[in-house]
Length: 464
Ligand SMILES: Nc1nc2c(ncn2[C@@H]2O[C@H](COP(=O)(O)OP(=O)(O)OP(=O)(O)O)[C@@H](O)[C@H]2O)c(=O)[nH]1
Ligand SMILES: [Mg+2]
Image: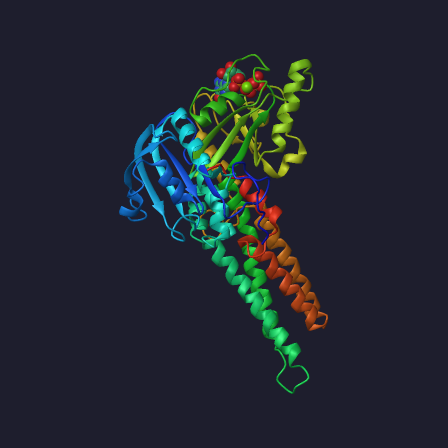
């Protein structure tokens, strides 16, 4: 793995990092608060701490990982704050390096002064995710676990939290590592067979090999299948409410979120900008979006609103297409391109229902009275959560990067299977299996190119 050395002590490097440098960052959100935590990691973490506090002997007197009270001072010995301090000896820290944390009062001015003083003493500001990147490079966690740390921080629903927590514990990593190990063993068997093929030893059993590959393919397919659940948990589901003007979209939106957020009015064309709100149902984050009514005769800003609504529908996991069942006008149909992700809702069932619409397969609700809203929520959840996949939270693929690697590994195995069936050279098969193993290795970061690593860690917040 390439580690880029930076010449600058104080400025973050453009890419990569120098493991020798000591990095510092505010670990709590910026702003005024009761407490703020500053963290420091690298060779000089303890020296810098000794320079920052009035009683450097506390570092000798107190064991690592134990809090002690300290007076934090500036370069002139002026008291900046009185707070708690803790230090860590490598490798027993989050990053695996020498490290320290300061628990200070949450003041902009004070934190700026403490950071400045640490920069003077030889630290530099950390880049986003650099603490976790160091933890990864020092073998404290693998890449999938490092990604899960970011997911854990970002999790806003119970499902996302559970999946991220399992992933930080290494559940996905172990699953991937086991499959990778099976592939490597199969490769080793083949290579042994090739090496000894000129000696009269029993040749490799292709039947067993075929079975092993099929089993691995099955496990990888299960993993690929788990991505829809993992993505849904991580990103939440987008549910867009659409339909003709005045059918009660905004009323339904308000009923679903339990709050009068969107304007409701008998005039058609009330909603123009999309209105969004986030709810948590059964632990899953659902982003509901109310859109402008679709009418062919709209012009000017109303037409712009129609186009915006259509654009919003493109990003939907599910489109709730609303129809006014009390209307005498024939209902307009949702565009066919959404056929596979549309749920047809018949609204205003508290009024007299148009007899021509009685037979249509609409889910009946009254957004105004709330009748049918509970059933609608259930129907939404049934549609967005993939079948047989509701409770899987262990060893789930959560990122497109993981899915791509698994798919490439599957392609490698398919090629291998074809080679075997066609009676092709066993060397070719070994090559296919090796490539599949390498793809899986990328998920846990066994061999991962620098640009991929930089991209992953740059998505983190500074201080993590
Ligand atoms: N009786 C009855 N009236 C409803 C129901 N839902 C909505 N309405 C009424 O229908 C009218 C239009 O409601 P909105 O929610 O603004 O409809 P919309 O589809 O968002 O309309 P646009 O934003 O203009 O496209 C209002 O007068 C609502 O009170 C319902 O279930 N029953
Ligand atoms: Mg509306």
